[in-house]
Length: 407
Image (cartoon, rainbow, N blue to C red):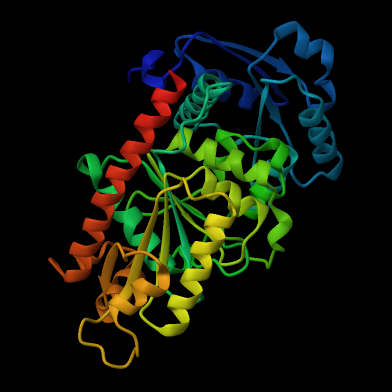
């Protein structure tokens, strides 16, 4: 077995200093073996428990990573861990290790400020994942985020427009770029009625509430830890299970969330609530494309026009906007409105027409797969692909302009 791990394999730039405070001899041996042979990593293991972690010990080793052994079922230890996370120096990432931690335990650890958890017995695979995440976090610290060319945000004219469905299918289509290697995530920020995880048949252990509840601890590692991974390769930030007030998130934390997501992924798809907030405005401002989803009814077109007016009134007219008409049936006689009439009411042309293939789309959602896996060469698939291709051109233009402005 090859125990060596080169720095470039883990994307380490420079050295990473690791201090571990471990209580048992067996765990100390496991940890030493798991870290053995990693280039660019300096490991110091001290015997002790959380009470032994103090300023003098930290300053003596100046760690980038602090690994601490914790009993999650001990309130006193959890309180002490919270104090360590609050009092740590900037740039120190706290990693917890222990046995038998439940999903709720991990959520509590994240809220305290712990950025990762290593279950015991400690495996080399888990350590590699943690080290790589910490190295990436160090590289990204202070680096300006380029969000304009990566984010597609979905806004609905009203409830029931199918915006979540289109957001998911768009993300799945983006995922297939670069021979299926594109890194894509969906942020379900409809804090009260989000259904992305449900549509993808996911049962997330952690959700957006775990980020919203710890805005001062939000970094790339925390974001990755709360993501639910779908078999398609998508990462999903699931909407909260509980009903959160829309003002539970701040504009500053929303911008930080978008910037971190852009640092981790090639493309970020955001499903927004219908209601306007300060933080939804901030996300739209940092988007490369805003997608307004509506349908061909008098009420939906009227509400879409209101959203367009709000976008302009909020000073977001510089952000590219795509109007998508969902569940369109060319020969529908029951809508009571024609395309020309709809475009006149909107004050602009409709950019994309997504056909009504309800049965096929429902099957795709139930299985959490692209529509192409249910029915090849469907009109819906072709239209989604055309929408994505058009969106990529818009994102590329935004990216080029952002790079030129930064030069």
